[in-house]
View 1 (tube, rainbow, N blue to C red):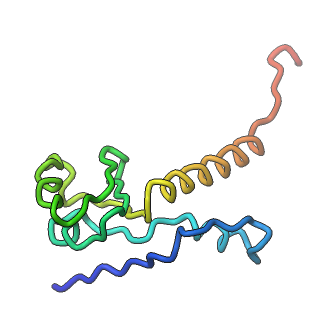
View 2: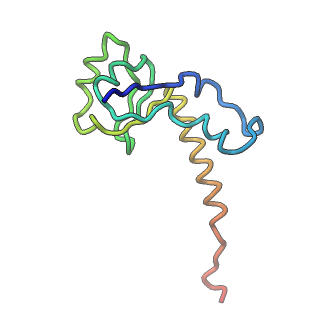
View 3: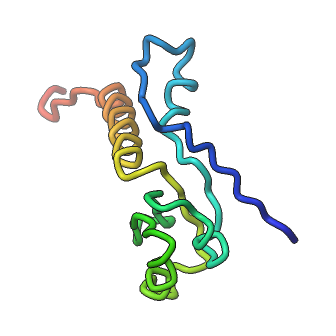
Length: 122
């Protein structure tokens, strides 16, 4: 089975404010990873240098090295992370912006769910 990895390298270049988008979903899509393949050697060797890769669970985070150093970088990846799902980001700043956006949403949702409770108020 042939698998071609399509990466939209234009996504994640400039993050626009919420007021520019018609709905919240379009706003959050700018933070989403570029692709989500399994970490395989063939795919790893084809990625452009500088791409930021994060495995499922966040156990492995790394910036893809230039082509001439790529084989050594692949050897340095522990076998437990190979064949595992991973998210590909444009760069580390794109990854950190994604985390920041998700944390903001989680904080907002947490504030909505917290109900002040006084155990002595019966």
